[in-house]
Structures are given as structure tokens and as C-alpha cells.
Image (cartoon, rainbow, N blue to C red; front, side, top):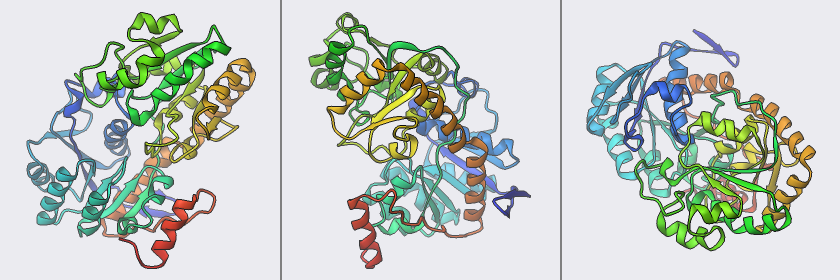
Amino acid sequence: MLLVLGKHWNTSVKVGFYYDANHLGSWSWRDFLNGELPVSGTDTLNLSLPVELALRGLDVVVLTSNPGRDPPVTQLRFESESQAVSKSVAEKCDVLWFSARRLEETKRLLSNCEACQLPIVASVGNGPDRQTGEALYNSEMVRRVVCVSAVQADEHRHRKVFEKMSFVHHAITRQGVSSDKDPRKVCFVGAITQSKGFHNLAKAWPLIRRQVPDAELHVLGSAALYERGLELGPLGLGELGYEQRFLHPYLGDSPNAMRDIGVVAYGLLSPVQVDRLLAGSLVGVVNPNLTGSFETFCISAVDVSLNATAVVGADRLGLRETTVHHLTGERIKKPEELVSVVVALLNDPDRAIQYGQQGRQWVLKKFDREKIVRQWIRLLSESANGEASDGIPFSWQRATPRVVVKQVIRLCGLAG
């Protein structure tokens, strides 16, 4: 038995982890555990959680459509959702964990688990959209719907699925790198997709260079992060249409044109490579989208702080839980602030370095691996035992007018 937060939870619970890894292509667990496999924040959770739980005595089995080499835990291949559930039952799993991303896949998993009476914990790193949320709420086998932040859960207060919601933050899975800072160097960290907002920085960059002529922008990311083999545009960053519409007008249409204005693109990088580049940067920009995207957590912000680099990102949604304004960096509220904030930090490296040092200490405490793994052990144990969510209290501190309206809808009994 393991003592957690004043209670005992049974570590003999057996957990099946459903993970469709086809988008990774050929991969190995060893590369992942050594930080040498390029993966998203969602993939990091999907792969690290079963390993962390196994290290603490839980019996786990990973069910995947694309097995990795050198598995540190039991790994079984499946060809369909029904086969994955059948193998979970054959392995005598007490609960099945899966990432609810695609609606039809989710519905098939729910149907098969209901037929076998296998309890479910559904992780929703993004979303869920309304239809997926309804499917999760209506399934009697779904014991918990787990968000990665309280802000993400708040967005669903007006939905019935909120009754099943809990949240567990992403945990820090590596140590970061210590290095001297280059006072000219700015990094962007994240996938090069519209939802991650690099186009906002691309538009701002010529204006930043006009005020700080020797500034350098190092782009640590690629649209291929989510889909290996994706055909990219001539800059090697995003899909052709995205590059043509959002990047070429400001950065040019070739790597040489980018270099002429101090921009270097690295493409798809492993966490180890990202850490090394971040550690030498003065400023790290993450998702500066102020509209049009839903950042539920932003693991990139944590990565920036972990490497003692000042964070700049949008003042909205998940970034409010991963970046502390004027402590770990600065959150922008208007598009034009992206230029002024980055320029101010480049011109005041002492302040940027202070943000980075404070940020490292803050994220090491806030997203401590041991604390977060204990939360998962508690949640999985309770789910296997049929215990419902304790609920997520309303907080005026993080409430926005939209969230207040959603809470009123819930209180009026109109959640749908």
C-alpha cells in the first residue's frame, strides 16, 4: 500500500494504457526515455505515465498500434479498438486509460469497454468537443475525464461532462540544462501550426529586428511534430499553405531569406536538443495566440522555464497556469505587446535572466514529478474502485466573464 495525501490507495491496481502511436513512425522507448525522441506534450504524458507508475509498483500494460522497441513495461500490439479492450480484459486490467482525441475512435472504445464492463479513465489533453464530451458523460464505464489544467476544465462547466472531470498537470520529466545566456537570442518553442501561434511572432519579428538589429530568432519546432512524414513548405517549418499565407510575407520564402533577418529554423528536435538550445537563449516565446486557439496547458512554457529562460506567451487559458506574469516571464494581452515585451527583455538582460532563474525554481516545485504521479495513483485507484470525482471548485481568481456565465448555467441546472 502507498500513503498518499493522508489516505491509502492500493498499488495493486492494474492499469491498461491505450496508445495509438502510428504518428511516431519507427520509434524506441529507449530514445524516448533518453530524451532523444521528438514528441509533443501529449505524447510525453502518454508514454511517461505508464513508466512512472510501473516504477512505483503499479502493474501496467501498454496497448499500442505501433509498438516501440526496447519497452520498459509490458507492451501489447492491437489491430483494432475491440482487440485492445479484449487484451486488457485478458490481462485482468482494473481500469483502461486512454487519450480521447478522435470521436469515432472514442465511441468504439467506449462501446467495447461497456460490453466488457471495463472501467475507463479518459485523458483529454485538448477539448473535449461537445460530441466527445457527451459520449464520455453518457458512458457508465467512464469514471473520470482528466484535464491537464483547471482552466481547461473551467471551459466545460456548462456541460454535463464536467461532473466527471478532474485535472492533473503535466509533470516535469527531465532536469533541463544550465548554460550562459546569449543576450541576442530568442527562441520559439512549439509545433509550427496555426493553433500554436508562430505566425504572430513571424509578423512581429521584422519590427523586433528594427529595434534590436543583432537579435536572432531560433525556431525550435515543426508541423511534423504531430505527423511524421508531413510534406512541408520551402521553409521546412509548416505545411505549404500555412507558410505561404502566414510566414512568407514576413520571413521570406527560403531558408536564406530567413537567415538574412536573423531567423534559423531547426525543424523537428528531440527534448535533449530543445533543452540545449533553450538553455543558451535569453527569451523563449510560446504560443502568442490571443484568439483562435485553445492552449490547455502549454508544456513548452514549462520547458522554457526549466532551462532558466524567460517566458513570453499569451495571457489566456493554460498559459495562466504555466507562466507567472512578472515572475517567470511576461504574458501579453494585446498583439502589439509581443514586439514591445521581447524588445524590452532583449534590452534588459538582467531582468530576463532573473525571470528565468525564478521560473526554474517555480516549475520544479509546481510540476514536481513525484507529486503529480501520486495524484495519478490516487485517481486511477479511485476510478478502479468506482469512486466519483470530487469535483473542481469554482475559483474567482481564474474566472473570466465567460467562465462565470458557464458556472451560472451549471448552478441553474441547465448544463447540457
